[in-house]
Structure formats: C-alpha cells, structure tokens
Image 1 (cartoon, rainbow, N blue to C red):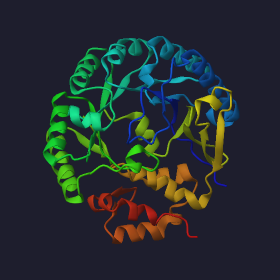
Image 2 (cartoon, rainbow, N blue to C red; image 1 turned 180 degrees about the horizontal axis):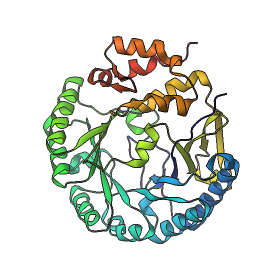
Image 3 (cartoon, one colour; image 1 turned 90 degrees about the vertical axis):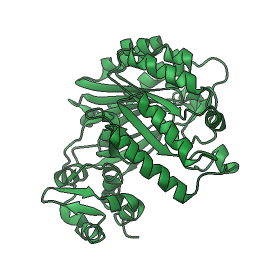
Image 4 (cartoon, rainbow, N blue to C red; image 1 turned 180 degrees about the vertical axis):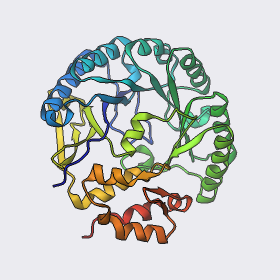
Length: 385
C-alpha cells in the first residue's frame, strides 16, 4: 500500500435535538421531548472524542484542527455555557490551528438569536442559519418554527455579535412555489448582505414526511428558470459560486466544507456523526456513530467502520472534488488516494472527450457541461463489477 500525505484535519460534532422534525429533513434529528440533557451529552461527546483520538493516535499526532462544525438537529438549543464547556474540553484534547474556523448551526428564532454573543465568547467564529424562505406561508409548509421577521432580526443580531462570518441557508423549488417567489426570497437574502449564502433546491428524500405525502413542486423548466436567474442575481451582487449549492463573497468560503470536498480528514463525534480518516500506512477509513441518543448516552459510540479499498478511491475522491468548481491539483489525487494518475487515465480521457472536464499539465477542472451531467461524470469513476 502506498504511503499517503495526510490532508488537513477537521472535527464534526452532531447535536441531534430540534424543536420539531421538518417534513423534508432526512438528517439524524429528534424532536425535543422535555429538557435536553446538555451536560450529560457534552460529557459523552468528550469521552467519544477521547476514544477516537486514542484509536487514531498514529494519524492525529501533530495535526491541529483546521475547523470544527457543530451541526444538528438544532445546536442553538444548547446554552452558550454548554458550548463554552464543549469547546474548552475539545481544546484540552487536541490543538487548534491559529486560524481555526468554528461553525455552529442555528435556528433564527428570537431567543436563540440573542445567544449569538455568548457563542462568540465561547469561540464560535461562524454561524449558519437555517432561514429556508422569507415567505411565512412557505415556512409553515416546511414545518419551520420561525417567521420572516424573526429571520431578518436574527441576521441583524449576527452582524453585531462579533462573528467573523455567517451563512444563510435558503431553499428553492418549494411546494407550489413560483419562480418569482423563489427569486423574491433570494433578493431578500442578498439585501441582508451575508458573507456566505447556501442556496439549495428542495429534494424529496426517502423516509421523510414529504416522501409519504409528496407536495406539488415546480417542474423542471421552472426549476431551471429559477436557477439561471438566481445564479445571475447572486453573481451580480458579488457572490461567487464555489460549490454546487454554495456562494460566497471573496475569502468567505466555508473552510470546513472546503475540507470535506477536498477529500480532507474529519473526526466525528455525536449521534449519527460520520467521519473519515487517512493513515500514513495507506489506509483510509470512513466511520459513523450510533444514531439514537438513548444508545449514545449509554456510551455506545461507534456504529460502523469501513476501509475504503483502492478500487473505490477514485469515485470517493472525485465525488467530493467535482462538487467544487476550483481546479483539482493532480498531485492531491496521488497524495490523498495513494494511487498513480494512470489509475484514472481511461476515465479522464472519456470525461475530456465529453467536455465534462478540462485539463492542464497540473490540474483537472469541471466544466459548465460537467456540472449539468455531474452524476454521469461521477459514475464513470465507479469500480467495475
């Protein structure tokens, strides 16, 4: 097995509780019933991380954390004191890089928004707010507990809280949504001038309420119209698309997500959290944690672990890298997968012929056509049966 160059290291922390489950959500989240066991859960998160650091000690030595992402669920249901305790304990266990980005997801309800300054004092540098829409009727259809007024108020609080950056999550292609309604949402988001905007198309995922009772969604022509016009609005407002669904002002890309898409490593703690780790001996593993809080709070942390074999590595690498619009250094394919360039020559030649990618001496890069046919492009990297 080829020796690997170890990529940057991040940490994902999952907090599974939310006020209520949204009908489109397929994330590992659980509706809050009674008081959330914040202190007990944080104690388990820290113990879980200690176990992983011991398990991966040969790989994590001398690797500071590049970023931390606290996702959910709704992490902002936790108090600022609890988040302070969590980040303090993590820092005792592993070094932080000098410019670490610490992102926390939040709902834009008024009570949680008022906690932002406390989260900043705890060490959070970036908040990601699940706005989804500025249309109260659409928010109700999506099962969101906030309204448009509260969303805008939360953004104003974020601006004066001392955060280095913040993100707005916005969805389009909502039930019975017209292109004008979708673009009106986007205009209202742009008017708030966030450094980063995640702009997703709603998709119906299995095992969600929307899968059982499908709503009426815009057709393909309307969705394409929304995307084309919305992309133009964002570009004219100074945002640059750097990932399939992510737009940012210059130098405000989400560093944690960039590490995912660049095939970086990330430790993972908390219910249902997924991690990836590389080792200098050439091994790469993916793993996940126990999904349900009851099991996790009994100390049953590790759920599954699998080795990524050499045949699967091209697909794993490009599935991530081709979500980004930036050039892919060929050296990173070799260093992070342990494979020679020749391992993907046939697939690369096919993609070049299809005009799905362009190539220079040192890079590959997805084209506009490649973005449109991304699934077909990625499928060519799947191992032969």
